[in-house]
Length: 176
Length: 420
Image (cartoon, each protein chain N blue to C red):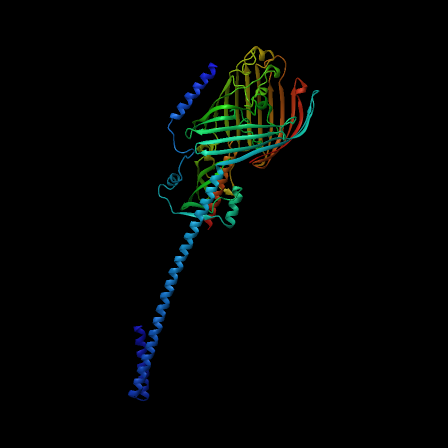
């Protein structure tokens, strides 16, 4: 019984310690969309534009994500050869917000801006996101194998699909 | 206009002059000519006025058309925004509560190598539903309801079980607490056991008999990150309740939080390192205050230590796990259950994105402390075919080996599993 009491004490201490740590911003938001865009374009945002989800675009986007896109259009910011995209996709249950920058027809960087799942948070670390650097698209598939994370296959899948989507949309706006 | 008048005048004069050469026009004729000229000038003036008016109207029409186009554009934009907001709002409403699940159908064709019964059966082993709800940004409910073996009830083989039902609260974005009924943070399969995430039809025997997966308890657990890719869990939960009648096997000690005897608690700590993509290394340590909840005076506290790694690099996969129990007391010692241990090695290779092959060597022993050879060794090899990342068909062949042939089952298994 004394063991139980000492156990409780330890837990109480832990919780007090944790509660007194500074409460940071909302759960899982690592960078706001505006801050990400400001970083990508060195503070001067180019005029944004949209890709409407219609006809072939809608069909291809559906094929890439495995489900229809939940909006009517997707907004992007472009300056010369570089385009930035902010895209959301559900991992296992919760939406994950990604920032993707494409330079030419290859990935310049991928960043997890907000992650709300209870597991698989490792996808936000540079060690993981670096795998996508310089990746391109062949037949709407990535031209490089991405190593997953044990127990977070769905989050990794969401990220892979979002990168495919950004690469496809970038090629679409470059052609039109 | 002025130019036009001059031209008219010039041509009229020329006509006058030419007629003058022919014959000098009379005053009457000149008057007539002038009248005609005046008439023509008036007509030109009228035409000019008309053109001016038409031009003005056209200009006005262009402006009106532009205004209409802008209006249409604004309407489309407003419509798009409204539609997107409506979709988002309904999605947000729906995403507050989410439903998921998994299931697996097994066919076992196994021959017992001793005098025991063969296992020749088809079984919908598990049908599971997840119900989760987000109360707010920092407070969530996770739950998992399971039907095992298809039918539950008196005299039926199956059970309806609550495997998870806990509230999670975030202290901040690095540390959180879980309270309720949750899966114990030990091993690879205990927390992540959806059929599409592992090789082999049945869950491996080491984690089943030693850890003992699937293992849930009621209590409180603190979890969080110490550094990027380095996480901890610390739990205080209900304990196991095993007995001499089952040779103190840990698996038979699971109380499943069903009016569980809570005389004695268990404390679990885990450290997990996942800093390199595709690599997980973790270790857990658990202390049970009394593994018989004080019911057996010949038994007492117990300690479980477990360590594992899971690696997936390109096409190659590898899993290795070791787990060992030490039970205090003369009771467990007398039957060799003071030491219960097991380990396995599992290399795998993906032939394509959809097809993977594996082999596993495993060894487990729930009475490793006795001089009697009670360990079971198993070779498994097989294939997973993912029809979709979330739907899998499995086939594996197993060859077991034990001193007591009644513990040996050899044969093959076929499985179908899904997760959504």
